[in-house]
Length: 172
Image 1 (cartoon, rainbow, N blue to C red):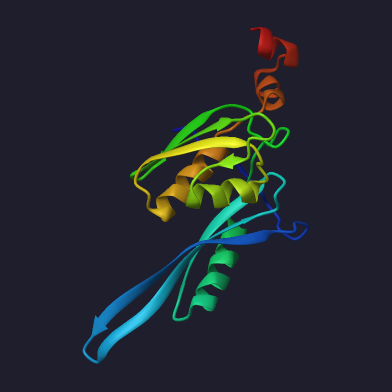
Image 2 (image 1 turned 120 degrees about the vertical axis):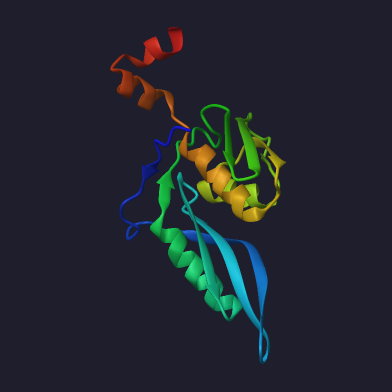
């Protein structure tokens, strides 16, 4: 699995919107009874090609969401978005979750399920076809979707890396 993810360095100049993907109540049984805590997985993005995810754990839901949002702001990546869709189809796997995303024509909308939809909308993708296979665990689905988006490259970047003209990338 090639990891050429473009990490984003500073978050100061970005207007990030956060989306709550899942909240999980965890129970710890102690001598004195049950202790409840919460974990929240959050996706943040500026809806213009930047996205990140984070996991927060706390005794209250609001505190867990706040921690998840802060964690998400620390691992942002840049994704190439062309006319509201992705440059090419991509598959990725994380744990038991496998995702497949492919570009779609304008007007299609985001055809994706739960956890994937939150990530794709946070990036700013408006037209995409997506399929998740295997595990439907939101944690692994979010991570697999981020991996798939991180592996996307637009034609301009490919041409620059190869040291050839943009025309030569398409005409071989």
